[in-house]
Image (cartoon, rainbow, N blue to C red):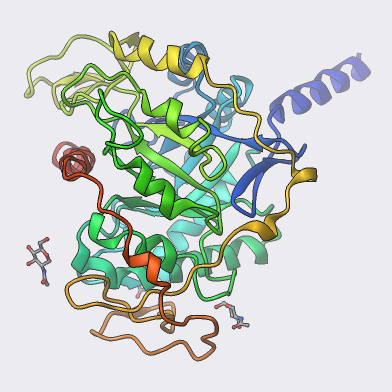
Length: 425
Ligand SMILES: *[C@@H]1O[C@H](CO)[C@@H](O)[C@H](O)[C@H]1NC(C)=O
Ligand SMILES: *[C@@H]1O[C@H](CO)[C@@H](O)[C@H](O)[C@H]1NC(C)=O
Ligand SMILES: *[C@@H]1O[C@H](CO)[C@@H](O)[C@H](O)[C@H]1NC(C)=O
């Protein structure tokens, strides 16, 4: 009796660990078994509140996500004091990894008046401490779209300070090397300076482990050439760390065909990109949903799970034709990539810390990172240990700017964020 109980417990433990952990090596993600990992992901935030606490809701959603072909979710806000065991296990069993933002609404690094202090540090660390035990955590973000305009680039060193301190926290606790990255708004004027800056300077203790881009520049019908993806690829070529889309799926004019998935997972981009996260699971006013939990209701309607004109829980129903279109695209895509045993991470590039330009990138070279508790005072000092931070390579300023429509798309993403603020604060 006792033995069979033990066997069941062991089996349960083994099943709870169904997915292999993932690390970043060179510019790729690998599972602990040495298989390259590509994200076919969806952004998942049903309300402002933590979506990983209601096991029944997670189960209903996970079942439909499996039919869609999802292997990862992005969650923007979690409550570190809540119990996530059941939801994390449900998603693990469905073959789904989680990318989790460490910040909460009140610990966000602010772009115009940036600081990084102990309060933020401790809240971020709590989220990591809570989630690190789940093998299906793919990575953590130290921020999402902190920089939304060119003149906010002075917040970038604060993003690196947060990265430095969260990597130090991870390592001091002896946690696995869970990747720690940043999710960027797609700002034409800061390309490729922001992604280069976050990976420059030669000190991996301060650099992000992966870079993720929220890009809405591919609006169907479009092509690799006309969407601007050809320019994104040029900047991502042999990038020092994995790079992926952390939000994508323009919905104007619609319907969404998700043809960009064939490009991201196709021969032009597959060697440099690690997949994409589609914005977003739930249908809301911004009309980006892949599923809905019921027809729209009055904006003023209130009730259990009703807010902002939409029902926020229940049985998910696919939004047509978007859900089917994405499912069809993903069904055609089965990237194998490279086995870690055949991969030489030395093949990635290194990036110079960009020099500042008037009205453009505002951080000059490899500056000394703000210490914990430091508030921006208007200038940065050069890094005392600066090496290899010379002038940017000439090609880094010559990348063609993709077409203007991405700006509209980018603000659509921002609208999504703003809507959270409007509805939930
Ligand atoms: C961090 O900054 C915030 C905002 O100014 C403040 O409320 C908080 O007390 C600060 N934390 C510490 C430890 O100074
Ligand atoms: C930054 O740029 C925005 C336009 O993108 C402008 O509205 C704002 O005034 C600028 N802020 C500063 C401090 O220059
Ligand atoms: C790398 O960064 C860490 C964290 O800021 C620092 O402690 C270390 O001294 C740096 N290493 C070098 C060689 O500069």
